[in-house]
Amino acid sequence: MHPAVTYLIYMASALAMLGVFTLVYTAVTRYKEFELIREGNIAAVLSYGGALVGFSFTLCSSIAVHASFVMFLVWGAAAMLVQIVVYVAVAQAIRGMDDAIEENNIAMGGLIGSISIAAGIVNAACLT
Image (cartoon, rainbow, N blue to C red; front, side):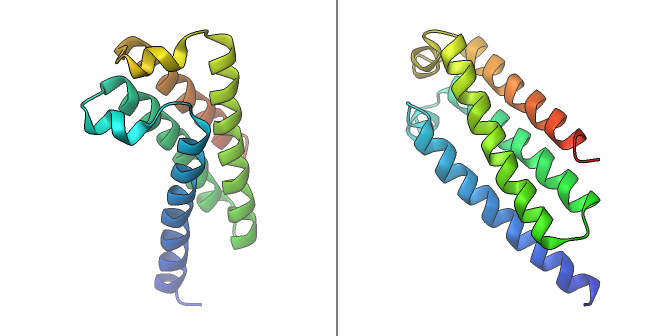
């Protein structure tokens, strides 16, 4: 297969997976990320953005390391699961986290986003 076709397949698939991740992640969280972001809530964008970047790290690593398209899809699904588990675990460990995000507690949004990015980096490193 021509490299340009392979590139387009991976790019389209990764973008589709980002869309699916967004749908799943925003369904799991208690607050409405996009409503809060439209209102200018920085904590919500830091939290969601961190999860999105963390998820993307694993997609990136999977594309770079695995020649198999099927394995790319499998690791993408696993990356989604990791980010969801991280959110649920952090929400359980930090009481009032969701309320803090809704109240635009920027420090809390930064913390949650940073934890999500860290989880994504570690997850991506585990693929190498």
